[in-house]
Every structure is written in C-alpha cells, then in structure tokens.
Image (cartoon, rainbow, N blue to C red; front, side, top):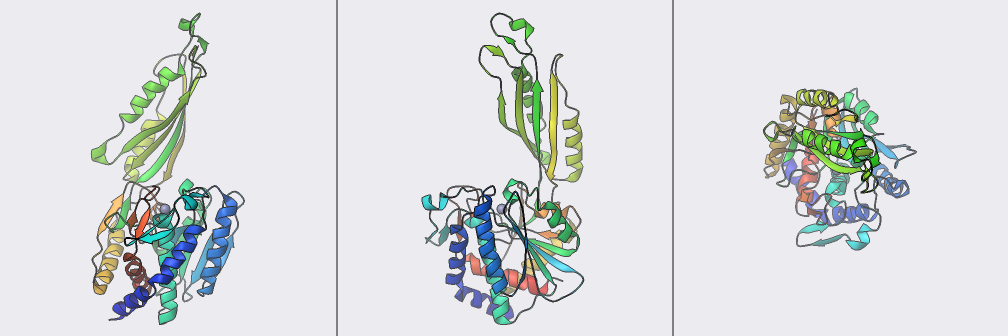
Length: 379
Ligand SMILES: [Zn+2]
C-alpha cells in the first residue's frame, strides 16, 4: 500500500511539479551559452540544497558549471543518477514557444530532453522528505552542462562516480511508448579531409586532382558500411570543399556520424575506417575521430534492474515496458565500465530536439513515484 500512498502524494503535488518544470524551462540553457547555463545551475543548486542534499558546484571554464549532489545514508557503495541541464535550444526560443500546459501536455523547449526528468527528480526528493522515506543506498546525482555536445568535460566525473556505484539511473526520457531503456547504440564521429591538387578548370584541367571527386568516392564507400540488419549505420551529414567553380578543388571534407550496437562491432568498424586511403594517386585522405560514447549493451544485470523497476511499477498499478534507442546518453559511459544502467526514467513525451517538444502531464507523478520506489529499494 505504501506505493499507492507515494503516488497519491505526488499526484496531489502535480501543480507544484508543473511549476518547477516551468521554472526550469524558462531558465534557458543552451550547451554553449555558459552564462545562461550557469544561471540555471545556480537556481537548481539552491532547490536541491533546500531539499536537504549536499550540493557541490564543479566549476567549468568553458561550459556551464556542473553539480555533484549527495543525499541519503552514509556507506561505502552508492547509487548514481545522471541528469543534464543543457538543451539544444538557443536563448529566446522560450519567447517563441512559451511554456504552456494544454490538452494534457506541457509544452516548451527542453521539457522532454530533459527538464521534465529533472522536475520528476525534484518531486521524488520532495516526496521522500515529506513522507520520511530514506533511500536504501547513499545517492549521488550529477547534473552536467554539456551533454548535448558529447560531455567532453564531464565524462571523467561521470566515469569516476560510475565506478563507485552499484547502479546508475539516467533521467533521460523513456521511449515514445514510455518504455525504460536497457540498450543504446554507441555513437562515434569522424572528420574526413581530402587534399588534391588545384588547377585552372579551363587552362589546366588535366593538371588538377580534384579533392571533391575523391570525397564523392569516399562518401559512397563510407555509406556502403551501413548494415541495418546488424544495427550499424554510417552517415555523412556535412560536406564542404572547393573554392570556385572554375578551380579544380584542392581540399574537401566531410563530417561523419556512426552508430553501433556492440563494442565488438565498434572495433570492427573502427579498423575499417582507419584503413581508409585515397582511391587514386595524387591525393591525401585523413580521418580524425573515433567512438565518442560506447554502446550500452543489454546485459543480464541491466535487464535485472529493468525487471525490478517493472515490478515496482506494477505494484503501483501501471505497466512499464522495456526498449532502447539508436541515440546515446551519458549512461553509455557508465555501462561501458560494467555498472548496470537503467535509462529512460525521465518524463514521458515526444519531440525532443523538435518544435513540438512536450511531456505528458498525467505521467509526471507516476514516473516520480516510480523513482521514489526505486531509490527506496534498489541496493
Ligand atoms: Zn538528453
């Protein structure tokens, strides 16, 4: 019956949860706008310390500050929660698309990815305080500020805490159907540079070696590595090169994204990428980059976390399914260390990184209540 009590407490708190979400959304926080992210992080740090957590500001020079937040009992092992404060939206987006609640949805930039998840965590912490529920393990939450640009700075911090943790919960959104995520593909990126020999396209055409022609060959070669059945994709998303139409292009380059479901396949694809060379003489081809976030593979330990969470949801009277995605999260870093990760514990909704971004209002207290039960029982 305790889970019903937690749920009804959180359902009664729904207006306050929405008010928190509004505050978070209206404090806009694009990854590369440090003063804006810092303002949100300051505000959030205050809210978390009001909830009784010990808040540590981890200063960043290049990005917004990060937070490391601790609460719960003392002890040698811990549970880890991951949130990111940054969004993909520039300051001013919220004037174009103000936060609003209508038709059962809360709309606005960053609601789904992932300020709804942060609002749920604040609600869960508040409910635990109000109802006198302690977590089973000491807890650490990291709020990093540059997840949307690959977590270049906070990765080390996340891995450091990940190594000490018995489990890791990620407050990124669930799948569109509300399923928790037990696997995510790994993501890598390359920059491909081609150098040829410039020449006048009229007077000396035969003397030139076109970098653009070579880039075209290389793009086809890269795209042919895609294997949907194996879950492997390679995408050249950006190309540029040349100077003028009457010059044989000396340089050209491409930006490449690839996604892999397993480390084994990642190694294989990296070998093939690194073996890349020019298709004809007089050209130089270089490739720079690698795997950014390793794949989060669906291990038995991860499935076990999902099953425990699904049982807790069932006690409360709702079914939560299991799913995964081609997109990576910071959970990928932790999963690669062997610590089991349960992802998708954030707000159910849709339109992350899109103009119709929104979260399902009615689900907010359910998901916050599930989080309370997880924190109370996972050990
Ligand atoms: Zn996100």
